[in-house]
Image: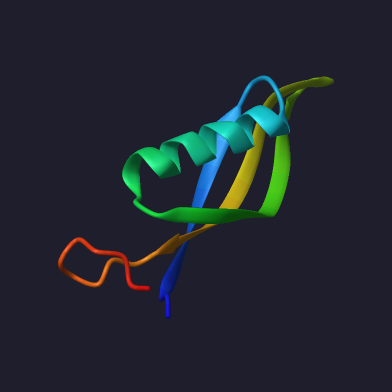
Length: 74
């Protein structure tokens, strides 16, 4: 049996939504262990005049919790 936790993060990019998702996943996997999935909860853009200046995504990151001694709960 596994026990998972879900945490929400926000990531931005000046390039695209896809790049914002990639940035968020890279950052999450650098900090969290046992990341298994991500769900895009929201996405939005920031606009200056008629130009898109930033893409933002809010991601729900799912990761499996350790059992306390550094081992995955399985």
